[in-house]
Image (cartoon, rainbow, N blue to C red; front, side):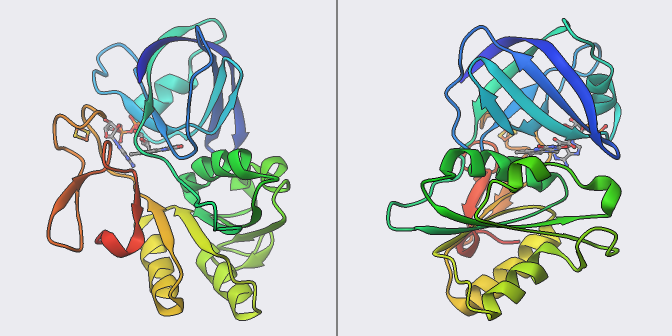
Length: 251
Ligand SMILES: Cc1cc2nc3c(=O)[nH]c(=O)nc-3n(C[C@H](O)[C@H](O)[C@H](O)COP(=O)(O)OP(=O)(O)OC[C@H]3O[C@@H](n4cnc5c(N)ncnc54)[C@H](O)[C@@H]3O)c2cc1C
Ligand code: FES
């Protein structure tokens, strides 16, 4: 982990309310898929914003973010050449075992961005099926990346792009047809992850979920981000996660 001085090389809108910022770092970072960076947006915004690493190309790293509140609004306004601090890589990230050849990615909302990093890490090595849910056609992004998967199913809540269903329904539909993965990796809103866990538990499929929790320090020191484990213990999403075995975390 390093606190990089990052220089904005591109910051553009990629979908309705979603932007992608690319930073040039001083050196190529070593990042595992599913890890995140903590971006210091400056000014009075002392708390950094945790955002998943989406792509790494040499010394350049891209984060995709939804404009939500003051911090992401401030990030959106940063033009080319702006310098800011990005602490990364943080968290554990996704791991796929050697024996797991078929991987299903299930994502919704801003959860689609860490899954792009999984696809980029494992494309060619694993057989990947991606089931991605968007709110509507205007929110669709990352298609050029997901099309590199062996199978890509895009769906929307209102049916304006792909079928009208959510990502979990799209995954379950394919599972019923016999397209059974060895492992499921997911990121998205908690209700989506809960619905997915119900399916994977029933089917006895290994499933790993990346959680989104409000964060303070991002490095395991403040305990703002704790979540409940099924064994009664607690875990820090920033340090012990954000990726957890779905069977071991309370959703
Ligand atoms: C591990 C991880 C990865 C994430 N990856 C992405 C991503 O790739 N793209 C993306 O758009 N968003 C992502 N998020 C959510 C993102 O961190 C929040 O949307 C963002 O911090 C909102 O900041 P804000 O100042 O615009 O909003 P405000 O609501 O003004 O934020 C106020 C404070 O609450 C925190 N906060 C608010 N919402 C969240 C949230 N959902 N999760 C964590 N902290 C929050 C902010 O960091 C800030 O400290 C991720 C969150 C986590 C924990
Ligand atoms: S954010 Fe401080 S311990 Fe996780």
